[in-house]
Length: 355
Image (cartoon, rainbow, N blue to C red):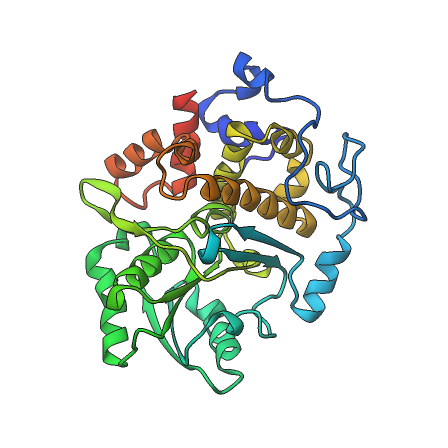
């Protein structure tokens, strides 16, 4: 899954001995850019390789950093913001480099005077101090912390109880905010804990993996696994904001990084052929984690996810299309054992099986 090729789709197909570009159904999707990237309006951005249009139409051309990425590293302002439109429960997705290093972007979404940061043993040594310092810098927010074991195998009720235990021990009331700092497992568990604690408290997503940045942190799906099935216990519960600091991807292992791109490929397959073509044309920059490529990929993915969630928040119709590859993928994860295959690896295989 870490093999680099000149075609993004083949990155996920190589280990199965399949080149999905050859499939007749794929030929209807792999075509010149025709559909505008919704919500992208940066007329000053560089041109897309092989497309001849500005980023407001298809995407950035690489070779140099985008100006917005350079700026956000200096003053911790977002390079992009995507809105999830859900009426009075709408919320922003902030995307940029260095967003956790300072500023009030995070604190302005904490309405009360207490917060509980939930993270895991892998992420805590890397970014916990940064988040706690950010929340505490005004002196008006008491910050508590709970650190959970890392891994899909720990996504269960027994481990989740540690979050509620900590909230009760530190006497957090209904005005508190739970902050999820980590990947999809931490985000799902923290969201479910927030939905359940005192019948619902605020929560914020700070995803630190590609998978969580482009998919699981957006849309309000929360929960834990059951021995009989993945994500069988949970709730739909939306965050107050999603804060995506791309700097955290600098410590993400290659296997995790590539696994997360499965969800990105999915958006191109189900609803955004121009984005799929962009991935084909720019896979080298994406695999090299070039900053402007990463920001654009996350932004475009979040736009696709936000549009679907706005149309069908609780998966009564069109949102089910986001499950492409997941029926087989979840069966692989459950059958082999949680944690043996990464979620994106299982979804990659599941998409090929579904096709």
